[in-house]
Length: 174
Image (cartoon, one colour):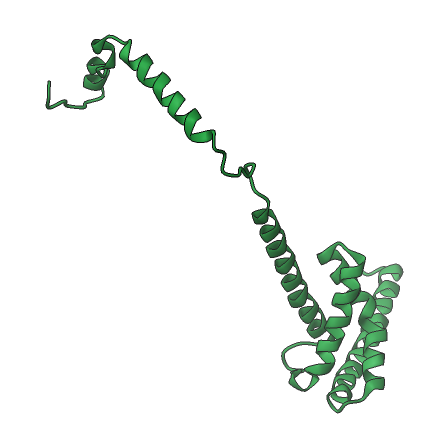
C-alpha cells in the first residue's frame, strides 16, 4: 500500500521528470536553431550543460586546464558539426557527452604517446663515447679467461655426461 510520503515523493519525481522533458524538448529546438547558425541558442545550450560536460572532462583528464580546453573544444565541435546532429540517435546532452568523451580519450592517448616518446628518448644505459681503452680492457679480459681455461684439467672442460644422460640427451660422440 502506498503511503502519503511515497505519493508526495512520486509527485515530486513526476514534476522533476516533466521539467526534464520540457527542457529536453527545448534542447532539440536549440539544436535546430544552432544548426541554423543561432549563436544565442548555442549560448543557451552551453549555459545549460557546460557544468555537466566540464565534470566529465575533469574526471577524465584530472587536470583543470586540460578539462577547460576540452570543454571549449566540445562545444566548438558541437557548433561546427551541428548540421550532422541526429535527434533520433541521441539527446543533445548525450551528443555533447559523446563528443567530450571521444575528444578526452584522444587527449589521453596523445599524452600517453608523448610520455612514451619522452621515455624512449631517455637512454636506459649511460651513453659512452668511443673509449680508446675499451678494446684493451676487452683483450685483457679475454686473456684472463684464456689463462684460466688453460689451467683447467681437460676432464673438467667436458660436459657432465651423467646429468645429460638423466635428461635423456644422447651424445653421439660417446
